[in-house]
Image (tube, rainbow, N blue to C red; front, side, top):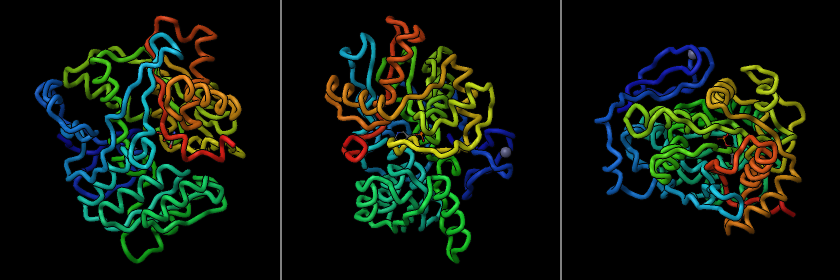
Length: 377
Ligand SMILES: *Cc1c(COP(=O)(O)O)cnc(C)c1O
Ligand SMILES: [Zn+2]
């Protein structure tokens, strides 16, 4: 059961039954639950729906606005590596794992009386927010860079959102959202990544699913394409929650963060031994989900990568596209460039011996390749 929200940096706590963005110190708030072996049993999952809402005891207590997100396939990918697996998030509604976060966040926003939502996005978050807002009967305002691939823009428009194209990257779009929300006479709730508590709750279900799909034995290595970091932060939180419910032991996967060479704030800070990342200058990459030059959850990601014994590394756009082709042609999953990035990174880590031939490895294909035709052209 959800008990309260707590700041990820200063620890200040808040009642969850109110609309909140960040802590008064400016850092992300994370949802806290009262968990014990009696909260939910692994066996009880057998009869549950085949969506992320099967874990409802560890999700916000509200009516689910659902389009069937989550419980995506975990494919064995022996043509890539003996014990390598691909979690295919491209089959989620709107074609990416952003559906998980937006399902949770829009559901909770609705529960708390919100009728209008806004978010900056590199593409996939905008599509997902537009879809869940449409289902919930809410007004949606998306702010995307003007050069966002066309599929995302058309998708949001058809889903009924108000589309704003901005000259600048996602952090500039974020500033536009703040201005817009502050100047509006009506309440518009800002659903920016980790600037409200529940997108991370939706995305943490990837961690629950990997555990359930692997028979409660977590992999040795998880390779994840990192933008704002909700997935990394969420999965790490999920492992802790599962341990408290007695579902898994204390073993954790090595968490590997992959970023694009042209936009790598987390990798840079990690390599410098720092905890907070500077804004990455002149950010550029055709993997739109990775075009995040500044992330509010930088310290949470860097702390967990270190605690897990993982690492952080970059791949070039060329390596990404090349690896997306290899990933697609050897698994049957037409991946997003962000998914290809995880394969390129895992191969580099195998070459240097960081990943061993006996390791169980999970790569995340975070979106469908179909929305990225420009990037592949
Ligand atoms: C948003 C996005 C990412 C980055 O995910 P975070 O959890 O925000 O780090 C990676 N891949 C795709 C396809 C995305 O849309
Ligand atoms: Zn705080």
